[in-house]
Image 1 (cartoon, rainbow, N blue to C red):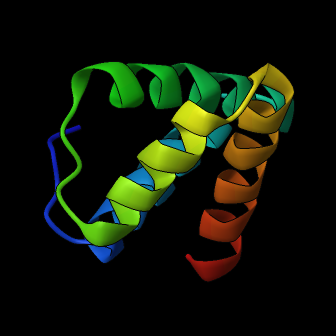
Image 2: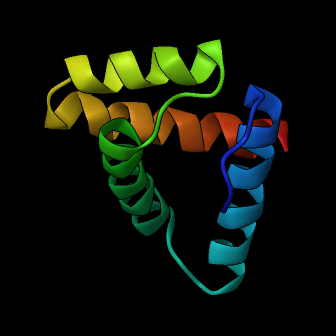
Length: 83
């Protein structure tokens, strides 16, 4: 997955990745767990490309593990509802 410049591109890429994971038989819980791992990586290694990504990074960095799990779960749910 390449880096994106807009939040819409970001969520489109997430939706594609999640559909692929679902077709491969991944559970919702596994998808959220992977979203958490990606969130950790993004927060540590990637410079945000949009104001929304910057907000997500700031929220991620300010959160504890339980809150990060919630953020990942909400992001997965949001992407599933809009795509």
